[in-house]
Length: 137
DNA sequence: GCCAACGTTGGC
DNA sequence: GCCAACGTTGGC
Image (tube, rainbow, N blue to C red):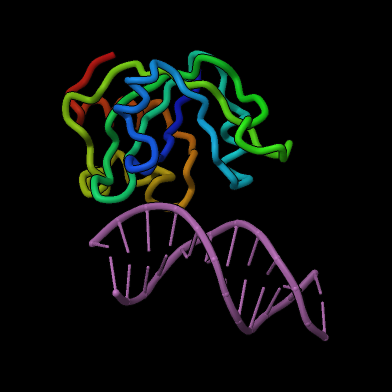
């Protein structure tokens, strides 16, 4: 079981879009490191959904429902997309500003590689976020 | 709107 | 293979 964080611009595809769709292929990633993380996802892995832009906050938890396959939005076979399903919204979104202030979260990839759209999260970080979000799985 | 950080492209 | 120029992301 691994933990991840996926960023999305809510104007393009938000947590609520995911809830509405019931499941989605996480398409459009065009960065090799992010792609490698998508390929490493296994069904059952848990994914923090982060809204970039105005909100800049973790807003929900999704689950990987199918391993990555060819991204159907391109013919380029380098790019892949896993399938995600919404699991639970956070009772309280956790903003980036709060993550920056939280001692246990100083090593999050989010703070070091601000432009990486798919990144691994440790189990401890994952549950620390849930704690700040006052949310239990 | 600005800018830092980073990835990509292309000339050499 | 290096690096300058340029484009993009994303926080502020």
